[in-house]
Image (cartoon, rainbow, N blue to C red; front, side, top):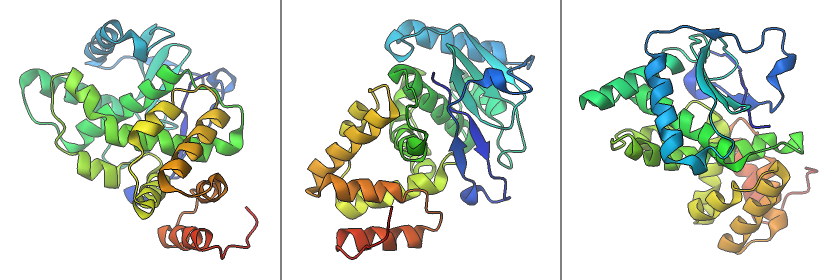
Length: 267
């Protein structure tokens, strides 16, 4: 089952927003995915359908449809071969996934520049493509907050691939890497960790997320990062266990303790 449902901790500041992924079947929710009509969504569906035809490897289970929904629990979700895009405006101030992706594709067609939010809407689609391509399944819920940041980190670094398919060059990637909305603190901690270790494991992590189960993804990622950094898998695993630490300075202090053999805390 491959859905990234993001529940938002709304605190009014974009850089404080934390997303939590719950890979659960949406069917059990009181108000399951009810499709809504939005001007321009048909153009998005057509573009994503063409994308699936040209890159079937990104959608190994196919693509039944692309739908707009009113749901503030996520920006985008790939579920049972359907791509759902939210029109919610209360998740992030000034950002609405459906509107931004519609404007992004229209601007590309006109040869106009994209805004930061336009590009982020593309990045969000790419995040779901990674889930779709890997046919991801959660076999250990404890690893959600370690695997989702890996996927988000890859999406931040690789979404220009999707933009290129649409015939556009990314202009705001540096900003999005630093200030992207989804899993913000987690990705920031992960980015700092890689910098601290002196590695850029994009190719290795791309291979890790090809695996299906979250346990496998986490294990392979830790193995690869340990090999690149020259550290033990145990140390890298402990660094991953702390990714949820909200305060970046606290996370860095914990990692330094781990790297310097001074951490006696129980994970």
